[in-house]
Amino acid sequence: MATAMIGGCKKKDDGPSCNPEDKAKFKVNVLVQPQLNINPDENGEALPTVMRFYQLDSDESLATLDFADTWQKGKEVFGDSFLAEDERQIFPGKPETIEIEPDEKTAFILAVALFREPTGINWYRLWEKPKYHGDSVCLAERAHKTWADPCFYIVLDRSVVDGGHTPPPGFDKSKTTLVCPGPPLKVKPPAPETGKKKKKKKKPDLKKAKEASETKPPEGPTAPEAPAAPEAPSAPGAPEAPAAPGKG
Image (cartoon, rainbow, N blue to C red; front, side, top):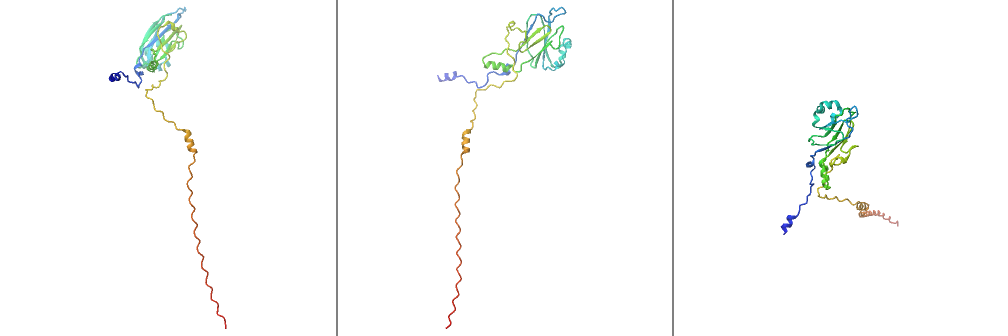
């Protein structure tokens, strides 16, 4: 009976059950919602648009990014920072969901729309890969919740690309059944407590310390006075000379 009871006891887990490193891998769900007016021609009629999704290990090349070079040369313009590429044709008013499995070295995904008449830098949008996705998953598990794979929201409106980790203006959530998480963590959260309580250091009793400092120490005994030295005896007087005998 005692053996059965011991065998049925569950050992208390003193450490975290979720390791962020084990939850770090994920797929990116790119949700593209094109408006009915995308990529208009000279008559204002909407046209299909080619989109490219570049995986990069840095964003240094964006400082000199040029539309014509990107359109004609593609991945070559990104040099050593290029890792992978996906391409998809987007049609007016037809939402698309594109699943991308990021490379281990991927730091950014660059979405590029090859519009007929691009303006400024509105033809692309940069999305940063979450650095602490595994931590978000573990935090959710400890709260008995789930944390889905991240989403890259994109809206195409005329010749403009907008989007990011949160839905941009014009994005209609009712047009997708996919569940997306909230914005990614910016800093790594502290490690959870292991369950072992640390002993609290006893605070010093300031009141007692103050009282002790105010208590005067007892006075020491006074030293006895030294006895007075005895007076020296006076010297004896000199004897008088005898009187001379009288004359007869």
